[in-house]
Image (cartoon, rainbow over all chains, first blue to last red; front, side, top):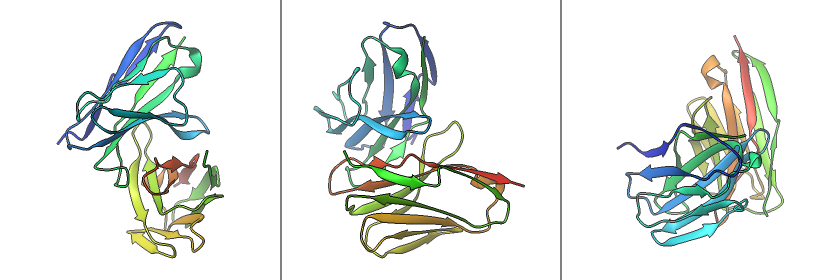
Length: 112
Length: 110
């Protein structure tokens, strides 16, 4: 199993550009989530999904969209990037919300 | 929303020393978790605690779920250079998403 994979590893965007951060897992996990990590702020939940077709907002959802059309994939979309979205983004998955979450390696995003 | 207060924010210790860090919350949690993040990687689960008062070890790591269910601590004994990283506590109540602390950055001086 590859576990949780994220692409790209690094990305530089200009303000206003759009992009999609990809996340995939091959463990047949129902629960997937997106976090952003900023210095001194820990991990903050952006969006999460308890299963295909179901998504919900986390602590900091503004400026981000998600969809869950399959169990395996949970892409995160930035429709119009802003410098405040410069961060490291982590995707995580688990069998259910109460089980151990496995994190991907992260995507480092710089918005100029 | 719920918040976890994790302390200390950072620590510089000599190799061989013991380390202690803790998390407190104003809310009750049913689960406490401790993760470690190595530089440039995602967090990895170290220890999971599911019962108030529970004391669990994983090698040189020991964690406890506080009796009040509002706190937890992590101890690392005889630190080694590979213990360097950021340690996060996380709490969960029922089916709600995990809430993470802001992390403790550990540096080990050989």
